[in-house]
Amino acid sequence: MEALFPLLGLHLLNPAPSSQPHSAQITIGQRHRSSQEKPRSSPPVPLRRYLQNPPDMHYGNGMITRCRDVLESEFQYCSDLNTTRFLKRMLEVEKPDFIAFTGDNIFGPSTTDAAESLFEAFGPAMESGLPWAAILGNHDQESTMNREELMSFISLMDYSVSQVNPSAEDLSSPVKGGMVTNIDGFGNYNLRVYGAPGSHLANSSILDLFFLDSGDREVIQGVRTYGWIKESQLSWLRSIYHESQVQKQNSDQSADTFPTATSPALAFFHIPIPEIRHLYHNKIVGEFQEAVACSSVNSGVLQTFVSIGDVQAVFMGHDHKNDFCGNLDGIWFCYGGGFGYHGYGKAGWPRRARVIIAELGKGDKSWMGVKRIKTWKRLDDEKLSKIDEQVLWVHQPS
Picture 1 (cartoon, rainbow, N blue to C red):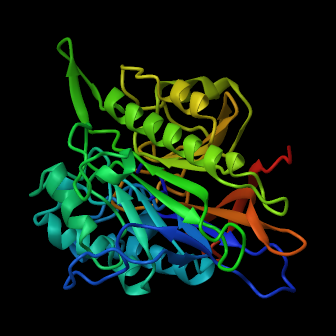
Picture 2 (cartoon, rainbow, N blue to C red):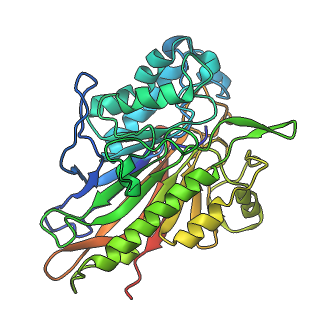
């Protein structure tokens, strides 16, 4: 799986329980809609929390697709429907405002109709009416759709805010209204979360969510390896960062708001980067139970994130038996752990999902930017147990 990140739970919450909750907003370039409606621009969508990652759902053909790596006592009646039930339980308990799926949403070799399997896999998200976003893993395209077709289809599903690739507006291009075509992969896009309505930051981005396509398989000098994030994608990230820096320099700052320069960013992709292997010898939160299945190519993703400075945490999938968070050069890299029952796992080790919460600060007169980002996981056991809660980032006043 490559992370529960099929289900990423991110919450944007009011930290003061006795006060009236305020929502942040997310600009998505298109409003929540059903697949019957044509996309159109709209105001930012209210958002308080995100439920992140159900990674690696590995959905097949529903009831007839059997589970892998479960206890013998669980096998007889176990199918894709267990994955659906887990996702519904997560939505009921966490009550998120946003869901992020981090790839291998369907398992191509077990899928006779990719479109039908996508509808089944994302069904609970669409039924919830929540905004949700997805990227691709290395197995999604192994059925009846290629990667471009998959992302196009996902972007048009009910309540999806996914994008095939960045719009020209993201790069300050003179060609407005189009899509960036000189970028590798499909499913590279940025979602911006705006401040609480009525606050000084109501029209300012307080959190960026970067989604990246890490590819599937490639051959390098005759040797097969996993995909990786390419230079064209990193160049796009750097251009977004430089554009935001210019905007920050030109904006007026209020004494009662967090400086916009400190607005954090989170990144989501499926296949881990090579440096994750170094965390085997480092202090981590969670379990490191299998070798990191990454590309043989190191394209400089970590260095790019460090140079940008705003990326505080990265969420991955792919290695289903890893569910840890570890820190590399000041950035947290977190697995979701295996979510889907048709994906490989470990019998007796419950499927799991990761949740992320972003808390807003409170000033004397108004709500402020993000003051803290936390994460935890929930297990698909009887109590939906909550484990490994930790703080990923805290705003440090300048």
